[in-house]
Length: 144
Image 1: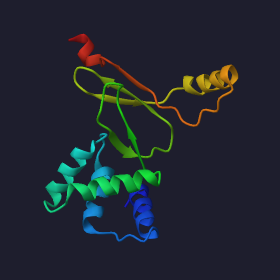
Image 2 (image 1 turned 120 degrees about the horizontal axis):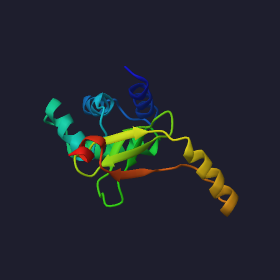
Image 3 (image 1 turned 45 degrees about the vertical axis):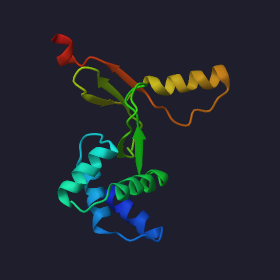
Image 4 (image 1 turned 90 degrees about the vertical axis):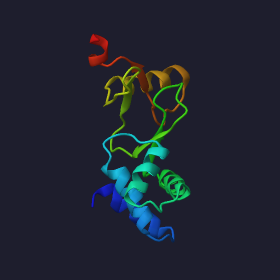
C-alpha cells in the first residue's frame, strides 16, 4: 500500500467513515492510474472491478479526498469543462496537453518561482499556488 492510499484510508476512518470495499476500489483506481482521470473514467474503472459501485459513491469519495487535500482536480485548458483528478503531488508541477492526440506531459519549471517573485514585487500579492496549463502540439503530432 502506498502513501496516498494510506493517507486516504486514515482520513476516511479519522473522519468517522468506514473503509468500505467500494472506497478501497476507488482509491486503488486513482492510485493505479498513471493518467489523470475524470470522475466518469474513475466510475467506469471502479465499476469494471465491481459493477455494484454507484457513481454517487465515487463523487462523494472524490469530494471528500479533495476537501482533505489528498487529491487535486484540474482542468487541462481553458476550454475544458471536465475536471481530471490526481493524487496531490509532492512538488508543484504543470501540464502541457496536445490538442490533437490528447497526450498530457507533466513538467516542473524553474521559471514559475521567478514569476511569483515578480508578481509579489509588482503588485504586492502573495501567490499561494500556481496552476499552469499549456496547450499545443506534442512532438509526434507536430511532425505529422
